Image (cartoon, rainbow, N blue to C red; front, top):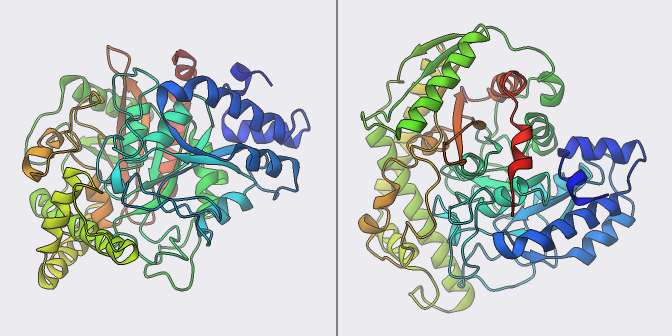
Length: 476
């Protein structure tokens, strides 16, 4: 299969070719490897490869699932494969081969997917851009000077550039939706507890983070959620029951929805004009499809919620680094971690048990406010990013002063952490592009357990305003 033919398909499209015996899994793997070798030197999306292992898997007996025979990539966070290292983008993490397989990897393989390797991340996934000292920056396939977003930026770059049609991602503050926006992809963060983080972690970040994928099509995202959904009886959270198969569900037109939309941050800060125009354009598209659309903000104290998120976030960084000190015998310092990571570590060490409990209670209360608000509004439409994708180097990863280091973030990631805090689902859709040719994603969110609503609406919007042809414009 020629590289350009391979890249024209989504994951389910490639799986259909395998099922029809028009192509062999090993041919797809070879096409993915060829594409990776052609473009990864410029993208720096893949930071660990096991191509021989993928070839062997493709020639062996694969599980029968929706994605049988399709190559994929795993993020260098949480997706452990026996024999592969997981380094979280950090020099501090030893390149020790994993001995236990993550539940997500087991689910991917059960769906017939073939992992090729691991993708680039910012250190410990703390940034909305994929730049780290261990691997160097990942580059956007739309413009190599720009960021892929983070923290699943390597995965997003690989999918947008046609290396693989689907890749693993995680989202603790927007880390699926941000790179999906920056790279022009579909990216869904599911309801808290929908996907197990076992067996290694019960709760990686105090309820903030979820695993998932980035894809080129809504149907791939729906099928992946079908494959990944499930509980481990040791999990601390369980999501509301599924409303049947997501892949089957998106074939049915959504009911008439009541959609609220916001064109600026909840504190009144304006977005970049192109971003505001993208939200308004999407709102009009929804209205043209028969939905009731209204400019309305939820009654959320955004400042308090962001403060609570930040408390949990830096406490989690401190916990992770303390565990690494126990493992390695090396204390956290600039010799082993980046400046921003060390700054968050010192902040996290100051968080008391009372402050952490208060932060978690604030997040729970926000979840209840969203639940009540969604009794009136089925979905909330916002920008995913407040500005077009930033240039690489905008954030100084060596800066230890958190206020200075994270200053470029102000207004850039206006909403995504709210869904992580409240436990609600959110999806990025690549419906708009800037005048300079960079993707401008928009986000839809829904009540806890509302993935079916989001996916059905997403499928309707994809049909009304297709984006698949955009990927042929990537030139690397």
